[in-house]
Length: 135
Image (cartoon, rainbow, N blue to C red; front, side, top):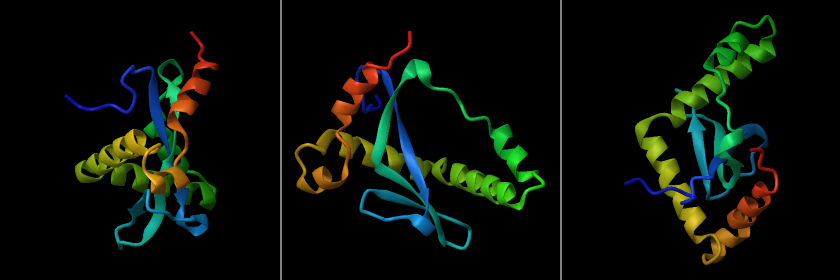
């Protein structure tokens, strides 16, 4: 049985990612690398936030393809970056690492001093997210 961050299954935790140019890295980050092993972005596990299940929608991969076919160079680059990020985090070893680290931070952020300094208060965020539930 797979362990879940939130046992009630009311929430999906959404992970933040940042481009490396403006990235202030910390130990909770999972670095996303391109084919040349250069860092291009990071998944910020300490900043994951709960979203009520009934508010989750899927990002269409078609939208990424539209960006890549755009006449705007900036859009094409962004579409390529999104595709690279998606491919990277869907690698089985990376996906497993993300799940394991996320569960560790979620389970221990209140008792581990190092985590306390950088992680959000996940339980408080869940309480606040309940205020915005749409049924």
